[in-house]
Length: 498
Image (cartoon, helix red, strand yellow):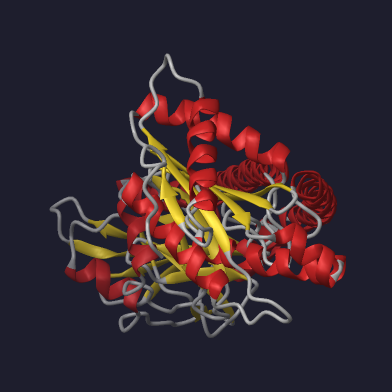
C-alpha cells in the first residue's frame, strides 16, 4: 500500500535519546582520556626531572672528587717550585732535599712520582729516586707548552703513555728570580685513579661519564674506550654548549654508540669538566611500563563503554522504531495506507494554529468516490476495497509536499490538507487527483471521484470546522452537478467542468 506524503521514508535514524547517550559516552571517554593523558605526561616529566637531578648530583660528586685530587696534586707541584727557588736548597743533602720538596700528597699508587726538568728538558730531580736516570722531555707536549707560554699555569696534558702507564700529566712552569724559563715540574695521574673512582659507582646500563679538558679533549670515559680517550669533541654542539655554561643539560646522540641520552654537567671552574649521560630509554623505562599498564586499562574501559553505549543506543533505536511503528499503526488506515481520521483531526488542529500564527492560507480537499455503494453492492466488497486502494494511491501521488496530510476521512470519503496552499493551488491538486482516478484501469466499472475544494486564511476568531463545512458543501455541490467534478467552496451553485 502507498504511504502518504509525510510518512516514513524507510531510513532508520537513531532518536535523540540515543544520540545524547552516544555523545555523553564520547565526552566521558574524552574526559577520562584527557585526565589519564595529563597524569601520564606529569609522570613522564617527573621521571625526567628525577633523572636530571640524579645526574646533576652524580656529576657534582665526581667533579668534586676529581677537582680535589687535581688541586692537591697541584699544591704538591707548587710546593716543589717554591722549594727549588729557595737558595739554601742546593746546600742540603739529597735525602733532606727529597723530604723538603716532596710531601706524601702525591705518593699514592694512582699518581706517578713528581719530576723536575731543567730548561733543556733534562731530568734533574725525581721524587722516586735520589739518583735519577738520564731522561729528556724536551720534545714532550707538557714541556714545550711551558717553554713557549710564560703565562700558562697548571697544564693538564692529553691522555698519554707516561712511564709505562696511561696517564694524564700535570705540569707547571719553573721561573728563576729574573723571570726566565728555568724548567718544568711535572707529575701524572694514572688511569687507575679514574677506574677506581668510577668503579665505586653503581651505573645503569648505557649510562656514561665523560671527563673532558677545557678544549673539549676527552680525558677519561666510562665505559672505558681507549679509542675515545684523547678524542677532540670541539665540533660536538652539546659539548661546546657544556663548556660555555656553568651548568645545564642537553639531549644528544652518543659519539660511540649512537644512543640518545640526556647529558648533564656541573661546571665548578676547575680544569676538568664532568658530563654525565643517561639514556632516555632507561629514564623512561619505568614510565613506559606504567603507561602501557594505564593505557591498557583505559583501552579496555573505552572498548567496554563503546560496546555498552552502542548496544544501548541500538536498543533505544529499536524501541523508538517499534514505537514509531505502533504510532503509525494507530494513525494509519489499515486498508489504504493513508492517515486515519484521528491523525487527520490532530494535523488539522496543529496546522490551523500554525496558519494563524504565520498568517498564511490553508486549503482542504474532501474527496468522495462516485456511486461507491452501488459499485460495492454490484461487484462485491473485495472489488470495493481494491477501488479504494487505487483512489488512495492517486491521492498520495498528488499530495506529496512535506506538510500535506492525506487521510481516509470515512468509508469511501477522503480528505487532503494542504497548508499554505491558495484556492487555485488546491484546485490544481484536486484536478490532478480527479484525472488520475479517472485514468485508473478499472474492471468491471470506471472509477470517478467528486471533490470539494475550500481555502481560507484563518483568523483567531475562526474555527477549522468551518473550513471542513465549506469543503463539504463544495463536495455535495460537485455531486449535485453530476459527479466527477471539482467544486470550489463559495461557488457551490456553479459546476466546474472537468
